[in-house]
Image: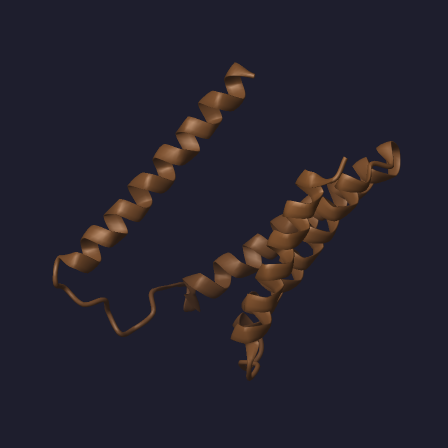
Length: 126
């Protein structure tokens, strides 16, 4: 239990530092570059989305295995959330390899809503 609290504090501190530095950069009056930063010619946002999709797929597989062993319905909702998150992330990362899909932003926003709803219901379900 103590390790979990330490990890939680570390993640909270990391998120605060990352968000504060970004906000300070925006408030400094310097405008962000018009050109999207990239790695090996790929946009960072889409590359991160693709990597998130792979991670979400792995977590989906792990939670499906856990659900098959325990048969707890809360794990089914967590599995559904990871599956939806993987779909959403692959849709964002899809644009790395193929042309942009029109209307992808509303679809990913709707998927975000269902991911949060599924995680929430999985937490509440006994």
